[in-house]
Length: 302
Image 1 (cartoon, rainbow, N blue to C red):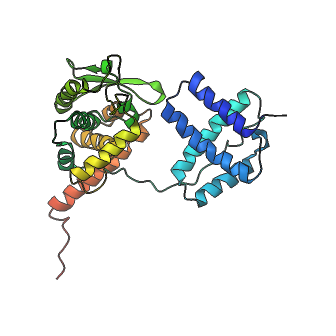
Image 2 (image 1 turned 120 degrees about the vertical axis):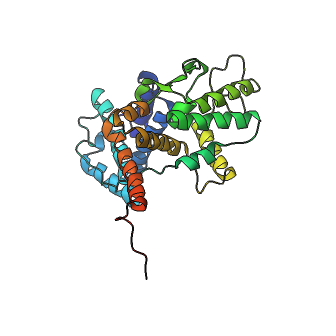
Image 3 (image 1 turned 30 degrees about the vertical axis):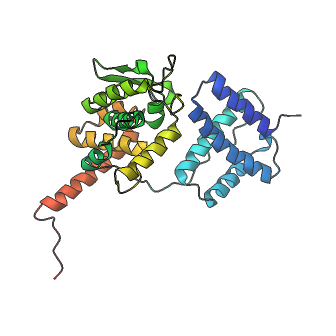
């Protein structure tokens, strides 16, 4: 008898970890998506992957959509399913990929939230001299200085920094590495952090940023720290790591107008991903126009 869906999912997870050597964060994302399918199949009493056809996938997707999952999340979900079933095709425990040729419902495009320059200055002006304060200051300065993803920041090692040339090497999506310039404020904050880091780091610890236990800091801890700093700094809302990345890209494009350079710095494979920031830049220009142009100003109500 063929293996159950749960057994095949466990086999696929092992494949992602050992053969493809994907990060634990990426593997967890696959698991979340595929567990949604497994939960639906359990309700429908479907036990084996070769029992699934395109109609089943559409029904499961409709159920997830009714449950509040948006178009973008469903696109990612379908992508995870396609990868899983392609693996099954390769190993001949399914005869076709039931997730192929199925499109997710479109979601309205949302522009990413950003901070303006003054808000960034307010957020990064941290006080305190404890090792945690020094670590947090270095993390947020680096996030904004170089536009890092959350996973890229958490994955940094001591050897990734070149203080002489003010460059940092990061490992992004698909294990692709890129060199990024680091601003003066971030360099200063990193040097201060490295002095304090000795208080918690073991002799063989290579991670740049550490938790209170002396281990590599987790992405979740970084997110939690930024939320706490948002409150401490009196920010109008919660600042998350990706907001600093968006702010980095928006401010850089606003000043330079060089979309290709911003694409390279962000590590985007396609420039279409980077083009979202041209919309943000236009919003800024439109506000300036509305305030400054004599023919743009609206009449005051009588």
